[in-house]
Length: 118
Image (tube, rainbow, N blue to C red):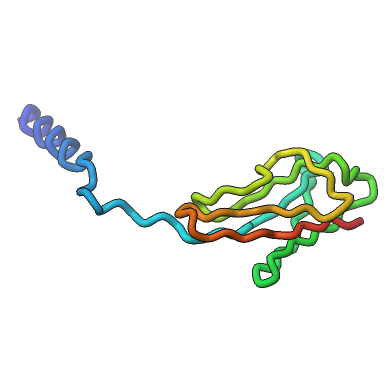
């Protein structure tokens, strides 16, 4: 009896692990959005930017003690999309910085103007 149960489970694993049929792959995402823009002061203290999806802007207010010339923001974007500059890259925010987001399917691009204020 145990043998039959084992064979049954093995067959179920084989059947469930089949590759999808040709042309049945899920479509790539068309979204090219910044979902969250965050700056950490330390491990437990962070500041989130206000995202305006219609104007493609992010505005963030930080305390005076943080040097705007040496910030490594965490940028969360749409699933599968790519952002430039990359999340975690050192940036100088003494002037606004542009972030370009390209959708997973490569057809949509949005450029966000990110401003950091005291």
